[in-house]
Length: 457
Image (cartoon, rainbow, N blue to C red; front, side, top):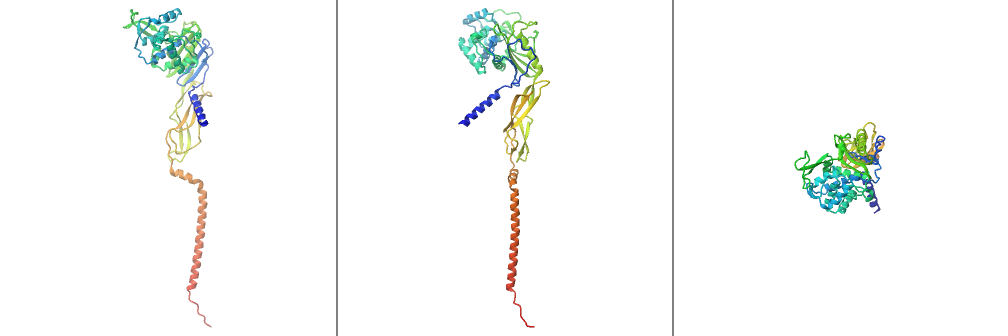
């Protein structure tokens, strides 16, 4: 019983260890994050935490809350072309949003839109009205039921210090709406893995439909469309002084309590990054862009130039060889990395090392493919950033004759001594038998010989 319990504990510890992301961190240039209260920069391809600042500090997430609201909608399985009539019961909520200067997507109670319209309205202009409509739809008119869903899903994503008290983010921390930079990373990562959400968040504009209440079309509107909503992510706008072509979405947020917030994805050269900036200083820089965007641009500009995913280990080349006996086809066994390892390294000065530990120094056939015989660990500048098991890729059969030869080898001196003793014994026995035979022949000859005559001289 104790043995089984110990094994279970060891397996759990191993699983937790394998699930932990590589923890190597770098320091960005001095002053890069001074304008932000919390930061979490992560390299997704290498599972590397690049930089973190106050990542576990509870903060008001403002409209970053809408990431969870949108995620619940696309995960609900409801077709996005499903029509939804904005209920009159949302009018008090809409009035409160207006009174608190909350951003809106222009929705009106009584008009019919689609779930897709709500999704774009929630994410692009950060419409609090659209987020409230989604909550009404998913909670069947019961906001408490929706909040139960959203908090349960956040917990499933691994958020340990997050609670949502509203679907849009206008609530304060005192009202129970809070999260951390690390938890927002977990939520944003789930959103990034959803193709529908990424398509929405990477859009710069969207045309809302003509409805019973929006009957006029703005100039340039496509057929059946009424007015245009635009993304608040100015870093995706080519006309912005802070435009970056590597930005892939995602969501902005602001309240007086939360400060300027921005969760963003980035992609360059096939490498994928995710960054959370929370609590950036309010106000605008000289170029008219807020400091959450500036912190984001400075961090990405540094990271994408200074760091790059680097192939450290492949699965085609043996990492090491072990001596093998009793096999006619080979006298060594190649150990291969079970998984390829791509690690994050500095582009010009990182020292990358691999360390190999094997469970045995040599092998005896038979050896089966898939046998785990060690572990390969990769270090960057002396810090472990990844590891994988070392395995055998093919079967090695035992040769009976080589096995028998080695089996007999220790007994050869004794067998030789016994053989020599037997040979000497046989020689002596043969000589003894020959002597006895000769004696018998002489005796027999004497018995049959005639007696000699005796004559006197």
